Image 1 (cartoon, helix red, strand yellow):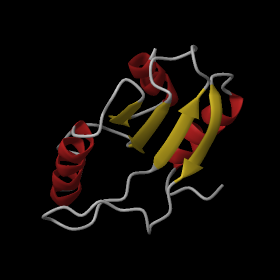
Image 2 (image 1 turned 90 degrees about the horizontal axis):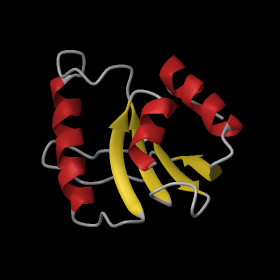
Image 3 (image 1 turned 180 degrees about the vertical axis):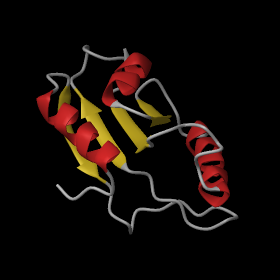
Image 4 (image 1 turned 135 degrees about the vertical axis):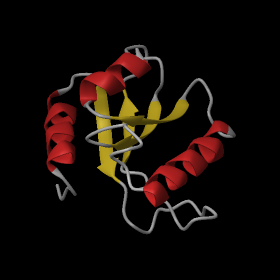
Length: 110
């Protein structure tokens, strides 16, 4: 799997080892959400086993840090727009979050 960073590489290793994950995909650059500050491309689509987690489908953005001081301002703005976009389609089965690790993702979905 091609990844963009060591954070993503670690995330993939944990996705591969997880018994809750059915399938996951690194979203291609063509999958984007238009925002006022440019197109935004989330990192992952993840499907979990039903009844083992709260959300069956998850779209995740992996970051080494969630501090706005560490994120470029334009990237921070795109993530804020994506949160608003996904809030409109979020349900008990579909969710969008920005996480720093697989452990943080699992805290959110269980």
